[in-house]
Amino acid sequence: MRRFFWLLLPAGALAADLGSKAWILRTLVEGESLRVIKGFFYLTLSFNRGAIFGSLIWLPATMRAILFAVAGLVALIYFGRLFLARETQVLERVALGLILGGALGNGIDRLYRGSVVDFLDFVLGTWHYWTFNLADSFILVGALLYALGMVLTPKAGHRITEN
Image 1 (cartoon, one colour):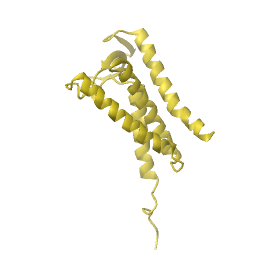
Image 2 (tube, helix red, strand yellow):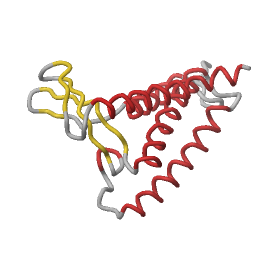
Image 3 (cartoon, helix red, strand yellow):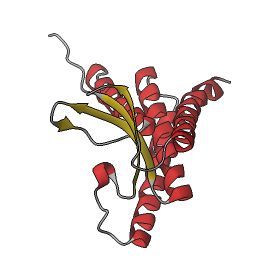
């Protein structure tokens, strides 16, 4: 029962990501922008056919598909195993749940569309960040929480003891 409860976290992240992408696809066409906060935050529909920040776009589409499928499957198995392990601490489990939900969202995009739907678009003066989506946000926040958990949770054999 407890594992079922934990599965709601990646499932919720996945649902939020896929739902937001479905909404943006119904609302905008590629390249179209909707101003949310003038000069700072826009919803701009774009499709990332490459990896992070559009990298690896130079690879042939078939090679990218194989690479992303293999990397995605390996990541899901690795992080999924850690997520379900009994000894995983709460902060790490939350982090892994976010990473899994985000990875599944972007993975489903790649399988279904051959690209990832991006739409969160931030600008500040002349600075313009790459457009991204909720899945990317879940992965980033999950990675930061996981790193925080590693720093805050001493591992057995690495504890500092007073003499």
